[in-house]
Length: 555
Image (cartoon, rainbow, N blue to C red; front, side):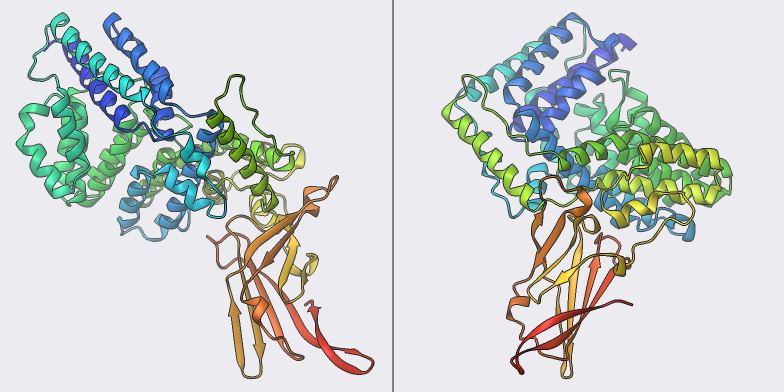
């Protein structure tokens, strides 16, 4: 085939599979929005002829008819990214842990799995907000009767486009995928590695010219431990791919496992050559919105430094972390502003149906319910990248000018970036920045409730209360946020978080008991806690003990 024919075939097969996946994913808000943006922003203009342009317009129309209101998509995407950041933090406990364990490549395989993972956005959201009624998410996405007509139209348009492309560009019909072969590809792509490999190897003549086939095969080989075949499959993809995207994101994702595969089978020099080639390609085929892939690239540079002791790799990792942080700070500031603002209710548009009005009503009800217990927001994505940036800044011993540059990005006008004080204080270069001390924090415990300023806790905080007496001790770790009190005109530092525990309500407190309350601002860092101490003292009325009080002890 000529280059023009290969390009046409790649575009044809890509859009054929994409159309099938769109029709199969009508209920996935995050997926549909992602595809819509991908087509508008990532299709390489020079790869689009008039037939393809018309078909792309049809696909965009189909996506528009399937889409959900924008505000819900944004919330789903935020939770998706939060979960990905938390998963990556669990894989790599310390940003520079690779330098402490040069011989082991296990972290690299785990990190690649996190980067490549698929998260169900709806399941993530409902799990993240268990206390909130989320029926509104389902109400707006039950399929309507007219979607059956839309599905038929979409399939017919895809079929017509295939015929026009094969005839018009004189392509081999054997390499143009039909709906049946697309169905089979999608089915087997998500099967177990062993069965996926067996099927794909037997169908090589069907999919030989289809780039995603080689990516799916590479993933299967990696999962089964056939690392050389994984790298060979990536090379096959590189050989047949043409430029139909501005950024080949799927290729960039598969390179994460390609690097891990190379780490398993090559000696240092060969691994370094392959890894550097792949990590450069990851950066070439991503932008700042692809923070997870770029974070992985930074970790690979650190691994290359550990293997070769070449300082430029640390400097490259630092630049990635810096760029990620610079891009991500806006998201945190926007959430800070939303947290401090009044709840903004959504108004039903003119001509809204009864069902749509009820859906918006339920959404507004949820917003108000969430606000009653809302704690200061923390972008896990930004926090993860700030950790890496500051760890590398310390290793590279950056100068004062660079520290000021970072400080001006994170702390405009000297203001905190994270409203959770124990977390924010990690990311200042100012000498003598105060650490959090329990004795400086106003707190109250009455046996059933514990309250403290909301700036010391977050959505992922943990509370543990230990009640000691002569016979032993009782540990209560089932404390949940009950309310966040905020009065009109209060600064956010005056908001109070009130926690309650069902177990605490059943404790019979007695004179002489000792109570230790451990607050962990971020569950991901169990060693970083704030400790509050109380003694239980008997209270008298008319000379008779008739109750107990709680006396706080400061160190």
